[in-house]
Length: 307
Image (cartoon, rainbow, N blue to C red; front, side):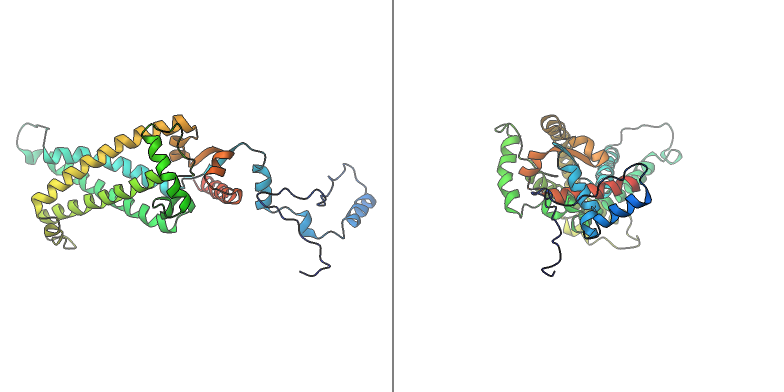
């Protein structure tokens, strides 16, 4: 930029536009061509980019006066995989219980009813959907938007590590409010890493048992049987991990109700709509700059139109 060229005013997060920034006056009603020409000449020396607000600058100015800000936290992929996992865990638990301990009695020969075969088929299809949802969510940690990324699960950032202890104290009722975060809190993120590991164990043991009853499947998975110590051990691990996941589901629902009531950020509703509503001081404490918030808001607007 040369010294003679006017400096473009900056619209940073922490600075308002300068008071002397030229703003074109509103066009008068019934303006004559001569008046319109004179008004155009009056601003002919002003660079056009000083008179035009970009959508980004307009969004910043729109958010500046708000105390409660809309934040698009959970994108469509996160919400679809979340509810797919929730639904399939319920189906897999019920059908798995029946496969291990049949409780439906039907008159006559079993071959005329095929109850167990139907239950196993439902269990298999639900397991496929469950595995695909888990794999999709893990892949999304590396290619998805900011709140869905892997560093929101593993606290590699100093700020996330500092809030880990405060979050634990909140869950132990030793602190009134949890530390402010944008998406997952640090303790929940670490917990979800352990949950993903359990889900992989469920998929692995399930495939091991499937390979024993379907040795001529399109791909041989019988090498998984000795990996888990045999079929008996694999079935036992499968059963125990199911109870661990169901226990996590109970705790997850309790925590969701607790945090929703305490923070009043629409935490539970956000897993349906994708949007949270956070106070400005919470966003500042979470270390989220306003320009990042604008980008998330624009992603949310595009997601709403796509949905």
